[in-house]
Length: 289
Image (tube, helix red, strand yellow):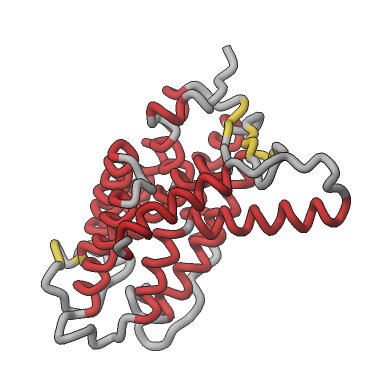
């Protein structure tokens, strides 16, 4: 069997194994904790397939590029190849791909605004053939990667949401979050007011997930905060490797301000809201009547 065909069957088979493990009622105590923690880690790593490969490319592609192709252009080629490969291997459906493309567009629009001449929140200093409005096209994949992770985690961990707010309320909050990234440069930063409203909106929301053979749960807000934290860590690594730079990092690298953690957590909520509107995911979202 050709290697490509074997890979096409291997990954979905591995996913089936992860999501259909037989129940083990006799597993208790520290052994159960260890097994569940191990499977949770494996499922999280698998859900991060796009994220992991994309950031591996960021860490390994030389600053000078490859074969005279600039670094940003190489990163775009790799991101496209990974995305196409996931659809080809049936790890992502066409509907999910459409959502990922939407994340890319939303993220790229934000990047264009934030790097524009009058704002200059950060810059992409390297040359690239695939820059548009001064922003390399690969940058949208950083936002698409978050959406891809949430979509993959939803399936692998059999996520279900209890006490989700009405979709129209969640949608308005997502719009407010996105709009504030633009408007705070002109009318003030209302991030903490939006965060307070979000706290009230999702206060009762719980995410139920299955790391192994039993359901576990945690507050949905806590999951947003944790994902935002890991994105903040990834941002620190990316700026260290010079993929983009904040103004305070132009002379010498320094850690990204901790306040960015809250921004990423809010962005996760916005992306989550889009994912929760996918047809096959809506049936796993409980909205109190």
